[in-house]
Structure formats: C-alpha cells, structure tokens
Length: 513
Image (tube, rainbow, N blue to C red; front, side, top):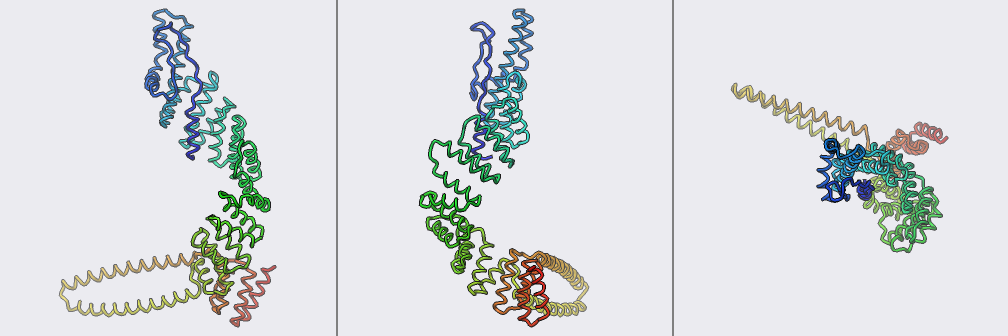
C-alpha cells in the first residue's frame, strides 16, 4: 500500500460515525446525567476505558438495585438497560478510534468487537456499516484482503451509498490486479461524491488493463470536469494516441509541446519514437537529437537513435550511438549486437567478431583452437611433473629401504598422506570436468544471429573453418535455415567440397519453400 493510500485509509478509519444521544433518566443534578464523548480525546479514553471494562456487569446490578428499592417500573428498567448499552457502545467506539489513531490495530479490533455486540444492521444500519468499513480498513492495512472484501461487501449491502467503502474496495481490487472491478467501484464512488478528479485514476486503471481507448475517454472526462487548465492534458492524450499506434495523431499533439520548458525534451523523444515506428528514420534521428540537445536523458534515446541511423544506413553514426548506449543504457546486449552489424558493414570484421563473441560467450573457433593448444601444453607440463615425481618416489623408496624401523614408519605415514592428497586432487579434477561439461552443455548464447553474422565476418577474412562451425551452429539451432544452409554452401564451395555444397543448396531450397 502506498503512503498516499495508507493516509487515505487512516482518514477513513478516524472518521467518526454519528452516535445516538444518551437519554437522561435521573433528575437534574443526579449522578446519572449523560457524559459527552468526543472521538480522539485522550481524557475521554482514560475515563471510558474503565467504563468499558465494568459495563458488562452494570445492567444486572442496576436491575437488582431497582428491584430492591422498588423505585422504578419495568419500563424504567428497560430504558436504563438501553442507556447502559448505548453508553458501552459509545465508550467502545471512542476507544476504538483512539486505538486506531495510535495505530494499535489489535486493541482497535477488541473495541470494535464490543461495538458489534451492541449494534447490528437492524438497530443502526449506518453505524453498523461504519463498523464494518473500519474493520475492513484494518484488514487491508494488515494485508488480509479476502476478509476486507467480505466486510466491504457486507457494509455496502447494509448501506449502498457508503462512498468510502467503494473507494477502499477500489484500492484492494487494484492491488489484486482486478482492474475492471476496480474501475466499477471507483466510478460508483465518483457518482456518490461527485469527485471528478478521480477520473484521472480511472484512466490509469484502464491503461493498466490495456484498454487505451477507455483510458482516453476517462482522461477526457477528467480534463472536461476540471475548473482549471491542465498543462499536461494534451501531452497525456498524445501518449495514449502513441501507445494505441495512432502515430500521426500523436506527433501532431506532441508538436505543441516541443518548445515547452517542462515537456519539450519529452515531446521530441516521443515524436522520435512515433517517427521510427512509422519508418521515417531520418526525421526520427533529428527528433532524438533535439531531445538530447534539450537535456533529455531518457533511457533508450541513444539506442533508438542508433537503430534509426542503422536503418538509414548511417553505419558510423549508428555505431557511435550504440557504443554510448552500451555505456549508459540497460540495452547492452541489443546495442552490442547492432554495433557488431555496423562494424561489419564498415569492413571492421575483427571488431565485429569481438562484439558477437562477447554476446555468444564461447570464444569462437579461434578461441577453441587456442584452448586446445593450451590444454596440450598443460598436459605436457603435467606429464613432466609426474615424471619428476616418479623419480623422487623411486629415490624415496631406496632411502626407505636403508632407513631404520621408525624412519620407515614415518615414510609410510607420508605415503598415506600423499595417497589421500592424490585422491582429493582426483576428486577436484573430476568435479572440474563435470562443471566444464555442464558449461559446454548449456552455452551462454544471447543471440543466434550473433553466430550468423560472426560466420559472415569469419568468411570475409578467410577463416573458413570458423565460419563453417558458426553456420553449423545456426543450423543446429534452427536459425533462418534457408539462409544458413545457403551461406554454409558458399563456405563449402570455397573449401572445394562440392558434394556438401550441393546438399546444403538443396536444403536451402527446401526451407525457402
């Protein structure tokens, strides 16, 4: 629950209902004169808490006293009992408000229980509905939404015009993602209170539910009902048009804000988005640039300008934007991928390969070869170490043969330790191998397209085997099979493998259909 909603909830909780006045039974000046209770009074709380604890016994004691003295009639006794119950109700209600004010909801629940014992829907429907509403608000604050909805429905059943019940129910339904029901309840609240400012919230609920047309209608009601001009009204309407795909209409609306000190940078950015989605890439570049020049630091402004420049085949400009996006924006993988394409288009194949390899994470065929060579060197080093260790072991054996019994025992302990160390080392080696195997099973592939374009770069610089490996990966992953087979056929042709070339060309033709 947001702080704003919580504050509203507390305000509803603290709102006191109109309680029935206590009848005065005794003559003027007697001790039975009524006590006036004010909601939220600390002094009243001290006086009335004791009354609430003792009130359960009061009716019986009064009746017994009346019977002994004979000073009251049965009618007087009934009135006296009713007076006592009303006082208990008033007392518990005031204590409940005080507990709510101090946010002691457990104590508030206890006093509300006392209130429910002396109030029901038939005797005082207004107060009963108010009690249900307060209990519901406490349940919302304590995140018991199911019980809160049950109590709110009961309150509305008793008092259909209890506006705050609809408002609280709107908050609960919104939190549950039930936007249609939330809108229905909020519109009922608006009808009851004539608070038309909440049509803006209705618009937001429709937007969250994906119904932008209804969102626009609700927002128009909000603007129409407002007594003052709303500076952002046209801007918000333009946003709804843009999100609905009405780009020309949105551009026309945003144009009115391009020179606005507050909305200018945002208007230019959104115009750029509309132009880019409409295929007007050159104009989109100008709009994104205007947004940047006006101090707009919108997330995606460099990436989107890069995409627009790429589509307009401004490879150098696009590469510059994608590099900035990599450094400043969260679209790192996409920006890196597009940057690789731009570098490839400019003939910087090595740079493009680096970008695509970073995305793929496998190092490529060249890296694989380097790893193989490194593994071979490591194996040679290990073999030399084993040979040296064997020589040392043989020398140790000769020494052991000549040693005394105690010395031999110590050597035996050393051998046991060595065996344990070898066992541990073998276990670690096996575990490392399993980890490496798991990593090979699940390659860190970000984009299969990275394999495809890296293969093209490898082919361009003559690394045919590396290109062949990447095209094969594309085929294994089912990526653009017609083109992947065709490009691999070209590599087979360059390698002089006519049979494989023919097979791939036939496969390409098959998938093209």
